Length: 368
Image (cartoon, rainbow, N blue to C red; front, side):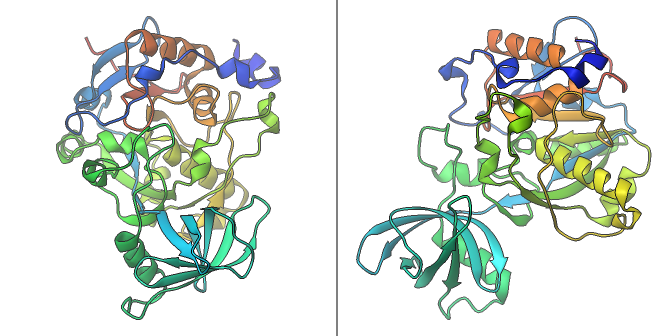
């Protein structure tokens, strides 16, 4: 499809459909971190398939590799109402002032209390327009930290790790390590930034030795990342909101003119959202405040920052596949996904990885 046609084409969810066998949906990670397969899309010809450890050969040495340092919190909590009925509370985010936002399973009405592990109590105040509950959360006196620190400490002890809905099993001990990046630092996500799960200390160190700068953003991944697009025409889809912040050191590298390689669609959302904001208000540069983004990137999008993308393989008809198609070219991406299925690559959170570059940018040399 020609570039000018991207702006006028009426995109539908069917444009981003492909057949994905169930057995290609990864239920567990690779035997060791960094051992997944890697698909690279080149300017011409068929995609190439290597080990993820070969990712170092896709860098010339002047790039900036940007990672998401969010940390997955044990967001699933099991409790009981005063009447004895069971309730599952899925923590979403802190609203400040001892209030939290959560999804629930079990009948609750405003004023109901839920007794949670470690002598905590959550009281439902109201439900928002999406049916999510706003609760006040009272922790026991044993959590002596102030504010948000106490919340994270309590969740680490009381909660259970949330795995994505397409992983058909309960989380186990191995997931405590493997469903967390090695650079996870800022708690707040309820799903992992999964492209980052492939990276090891050795890979990052080798990239730095080649001259690549490593930088970070924080985007707390929400459950909306798994929501399907229900509208036929994609412009009618209402995008989920996620919270992000960008430190000054990363902002400086964003303005350096060097190629920016995003690790995961979460990093793309943070960088592009900030760039659009800064284009309207230059005072955004130098501001590290937490913001929210509802950016929806589809083919025809005018890129501001991102030159390359390392990402996992995404769901058919998903907003994430639409984003990848916007960056690397719709026809090339859909062709490469069909090749990935033929090669039996593993899909989704614990699956294999891909690397794409914008066609207008530069391409790395092919790896044989």
